[in-house]
Length: 302
Ligand SMILES: Nc1nc2c(ncn2[C@@H]2O[C@H](COP(=O)(O)OP(=O)(O)OP(=O)(O)O)[C@@H](O)[C@H]2O)c(=O)[nH]1
Ligand SMILES: [Mg+2]
Image (cartoon, rainbow, N blue to C red):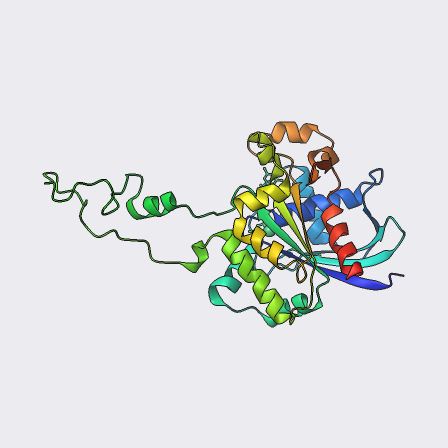
């Protein structure tokens, strides 16, 4: 019997890739002839949710957004390479939940219980929708596809304007909507809420950069840690500055293996395990349990 349970919270905004990773993790646990850092020892409770999610994954079907009331979770007893048993529970939370936490500055008592009891955090960030807000996004949001004249830019003072364009009209900025804040701002705030609620009790964090296949597809030769520092510098700096509170590691993860529109036929032709990739520094494997194993190992050390 397992000595202890491990509750791992899988956090990430809408479309971060959480459900896809859980569905693919199930594939790894269910594949007998594949050696993973953590192996399935027993099922705990009802598995229907994850079995159905995994079935859609094997068929390369697109998932809908996870409902905010999602009751789904992976609940299994796992064995590590040293033979230690651990009862693991990872709920499939909806990204909308995290967006509401940020926008409303409030989370539900149920989520608070999860955070207080957590042994580790998996922080999923998509390389597709990392949501870095650029100045040019502001321009587009203001004026649609046409370009916007920022007052005092190149426009000549006092130049006449026969077309009566809006050149001198005050620039109307879009109303601030917290839900449109950059992902890294929301994620840093998430970590700060977690720290506050846990009275700064340390919690290991594995950052998973999802859709890593698209980083390969763009021919970017970059390690996950460097990617984080370059594309999500606020989050990277927060983690670097708080590594006593949040001991952390960064992984590139491809849980789907490619784009469901362009690569579907190819993905369906592969053995499912070969679609998967976890990148740690320069090392690449198919073992999706590695970020989980890292978090659980760090939780035991701490
Ligand atoms: N190319 C690629 N796309 C991926 C990968 N993983 C997820 N995606 C895509 O990212 C989008 C979001 O994936 P989900 O797993 O549904 O994200 P989620 O975090 O569960 O989203 P919510 O349930 O809304 O919170 C989908 O369009 C997926 O097809 C991957 O490994 N590679
Ligand atoms: Mg989901």
